[in-house]
Length: 315
Image 1 (tube, helix red, strand yellow):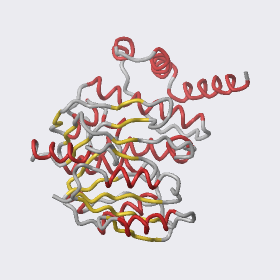
Image 2 (cartoon, rainbow, N blue to C red):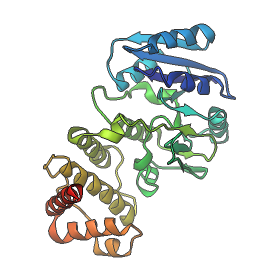
Image 3 (spheres, rainbow, N blue to C red):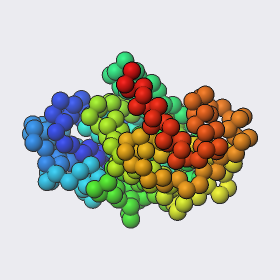
Image 4 (cartoon, one colour):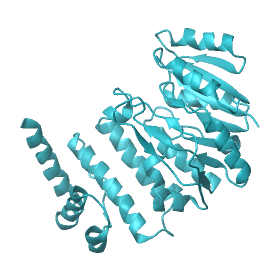
């Protein structure tokens, strides 16, 4: 079994080496590593070529800058493996991650996706572990809504059977592309296995999209989430509470979007029940938002939240 590891590279001269080292030091070593230099203007391209000279498993693909999705798609097009993995050039993985994932595929040969833990905020003072129990999720909706898979719909903390990508690619020219692509692949797969071994090491880039998303980019994330629930992974068979938690997730995005200056209300309906708002386990602030949304409407909630946020910033 061969794993194709796709690493998009754009101006990552300071973190590239630690990333590639973590991949090449995997205890499962039957892999090809595709370094896709996406038109870097620093020394990243030279570093990529240097790695190819050191290790025969490394192949370098140079292309004009086209963004993360285009770089990943280039890697997919040149991959020969039975499995695909994605690692961002400022992140890393623990040494046994691929071995644990391959072993999981051997235990569950019917599965097409294996998801492993993530160390969030790696190398910072705020490290936290996103961990899972070993569990096979037999339907996309169970994983996505009941287990809140939409909160960790990352491409990088999963090992994918390569044949899933036969007609699926990352949307180019878009942001938060992981969410919509993961949903499409999950719907195609029909199942996913989570394991409690190995780990993806996620370095929080202060200049990254997840930290500095503007209104346009956050709107894309909200639209992706709504599209998934309406046409890709339908929540019809899920519990009412799972559906309401998902809509609460959408509400929080809508509030942030309004605060950032996009006053379009995309949540025409907010199916939250009083039973859920009163009894479900949630932080006080979240419960207050849900209460206000039911009583006064989503738009009024967004207006009040933006006003309070501005007042707090002036203090």
